[in-house]
Image (cartoon, rainbow, N blue to C red):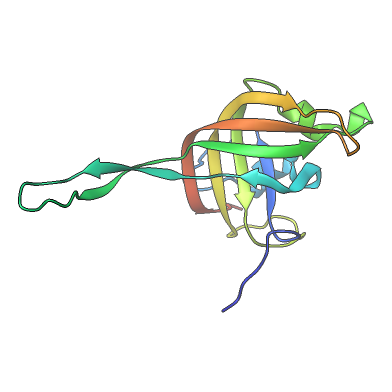
Length: 159
């Protein structure tokens, strides 16, 4: 069984436009976006998905029954670092409140540039909150919540 961690393997970007998100973003669309990976903490990308349960109980038994309901794409949470040089503070600049677009996540592929045919997840949505974190004896961080409108899982990057 081949297992991999995410550190050094996964990468993610904010791209403002994507002509065909259901088919997959192009290499050029991703290159025109902002790579957020270098600004991310190691636990800084969380994209949980939950499913509702539908009651399917009947009178034939005392046991309750349920079946899977709708899958909710939910909210992507990103914990990112600020950069002291404003010209290099790309993550902060790319993600102000209400910014719309796409978050593209490549789960495997290492540090190599994104290439055609690689599988990615595309989260269409917008920034619903951007919160600077409390000051402390650590690097300055902020948290972005990305409200997901549509999730396209496992689509291929287009040439």
